[in-house]
Amino acid sequence: MFESGTILIYLAEKTGKLMPTEPQKRYQVLEWLMFQMAGLGPMFGQLNHFKKMRQKKFPTRSHATKKKPYDFMAC
Image (cartoon, rainbow, N blue to C red; front, side, top):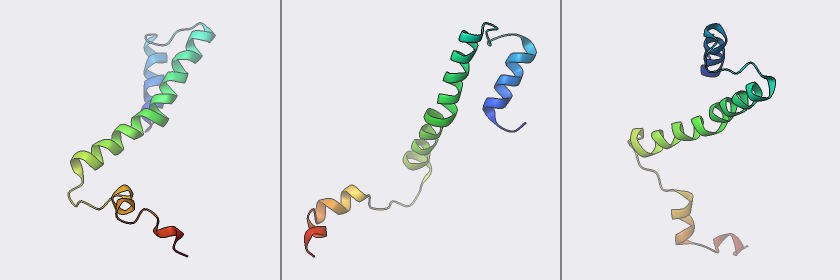
């Protein structure tokens, strides 16, 4: 196993802790786990990369649009 969510589910089922046996509550726990794995976790990873790890600074799109806000209309 190599996915964090799979490992957590495996450990919860193996130990009998942290995973309810009642179906509705079990799926509620799985729903929050999948939300963290698919949404929140990757966003915090990107935040860490762009705020702390990336050395070279690149101009952002908002920076470029402040210079020429209506340049796309000059056709």
